[in-house]
Length: 228
Image 1: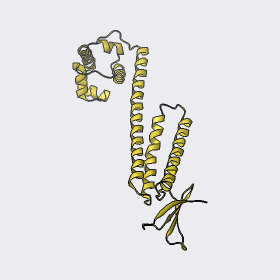
Image 2 (image 1 turned 180 degrees about the vertical axis):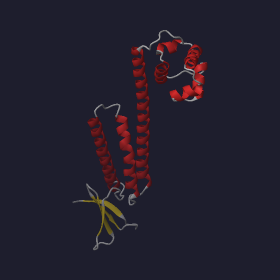
Image 3 (image 1 turned 90 degrees about the vertical axis):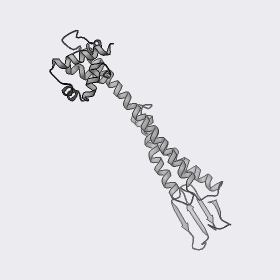
Image 4 (image 1 turned 120 degrees about the vertical axis):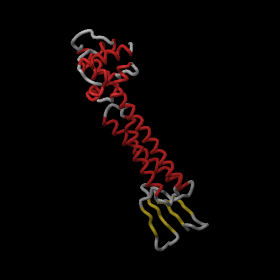
């Protein structure tokens, strides 16, 4: 393919319609600079634009590629093939964008969750708040990443539900280990009970266990799991 020959042919087609580069650019939804680059052979139209150019100038795509007119009527089969190629190209670009978005959302969600668990102490509710916030980024990211891998929408939804359950289990296990091994206050508690008879004793309730904190803020502070 000779870019200069193709550009000269495009210029001839434009002049046959008595159009300026600005007029052609407006009809093809590109800039006049792009038209100029095509016609000088500096740049070539992409596959998607070839379909529009061929349709507008009423020539076939092989004629544009070869830089000369072969017939008066556009080859319909060639046109449909090129249109399918253009759709495929656009779909590939869209899939690429979806994958990048999924990766960015997932990475940001994981970063927020890890940061929340490492930065905020157990007694601060901000650790659980930011962990949930990170999950709100992570779950959509996983959904976008699974779209090209899992065909059925229902299966993708089940995958997302499974990820939510895994996150829930992860938060519960880390909370349990934090109390049992590190003697920290559970982050994902839903209630803190203050006992009037034991002012130096707090009970933290989670969905799976209760934790006790005795003598908070003192040298004798203890945090342990309450046996039921």
